[in-house]
Image 1: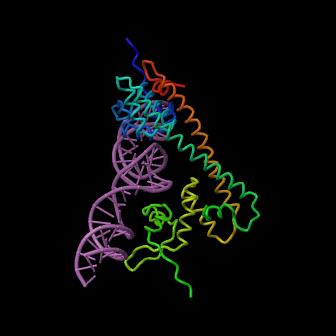
Image 2: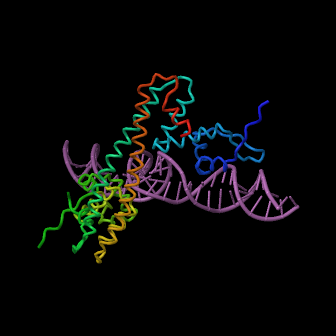
Length: 137
Length: 137
DNA sequence: TATAAAACCTGCAGTAACTACAGGTTCAAG
DNA sequence: CTTGAACCTGTAGTTACTGCAGGTTTTATA
C-alpha cells in the first residue's frame, strides 16, 4: 500500500513556491486553482499536484501572460485534445504584445536617458527636462 | 485692449490633446489639473494654459512617469526655486525603473520566442510549451 | 422662438492583479 | 491547557483610467 502523499498547509505551499498566501487564495477565488481539501477546522491542505499547478501559473505569469491567458493555457493543458496550435496562438499573441511593449520601453529609455544626461550638465537657468516636457515637439 | 483669450470646452481640449474627456476630468479630480472656469450652466472652459499643462502631463505619461511623479514634476515646474537637481532625481529614479522593466521584458521576449518557435515545429505528442511551463527549470 | 441633437454634468461601478487589513478561529508545541 | 503562530472570511485599497446612467446645457436648425 502506498504511503499517503504528504499534505501542505497554505503557508508551506507559499514557501515552496514563493507565492504569497493571499495570492494563492486569490487564484483559488478566481478559479485558477481548484479548491483544495480542508482540515476539520477549515484550513486548506494541498498535495503535490497543487504545487505543480501553481508553479505552472507562476511561470506563465513570470513570462507576462495575463491571468486570462494563463487560464486558457491551463484549460488546454487539462484538456485531452493535444491542441498545440491553440497554445501557440495564445503564446504568439502574447509575444506580439511583449514586443510592442518592448518597443515602447526602448523609446522611453532612450528619451529619458537623454533628458537626464542633459539635466546633469545643467547650468541653465531653467531645467531642460521640464522645458522638454513643456515645449511642443 | 487685448482681445480676451479664446476659451475651449472640454471636448475641444480633448480633441486638441488627444486626451479623453473622462481622463481630463479624472486629472482634475485627483488634482493634477486645476479646476477650470465654468460657464453659467456649469460647463468647463479652458484657456491655453490648461492646454500646455495637459500636454505636459501627457508627455510625462508617455514617458511612463507614474502620476505621482508627474505631480512632483509639475510642482517643481510651478515652484519658483529652480530645482533641477530634484527634477533629475525623479527622472533618474524613473529611468532606473524603466531599465529594470526593460531587462525583464527582454528576457520574456527571448524565452517566449524560443517557446513559440519550438511549438511551431511541433510533431511531439505533447505541446512543448505546456511542458516547459510544467517542468521545473 | 421652439425643438432637437450634441455636448456636457455628476457620481458611481468596473478593469488587472494583486495586497492589506480587521476581527475571529484553529493548530501545534510546551 | 495555554499561548502564539498560522489560518479563516470578507472587504477595501492600489494604479490609471474607462464607461455608464440619468439628468442638464448649449447650439444649430426650422
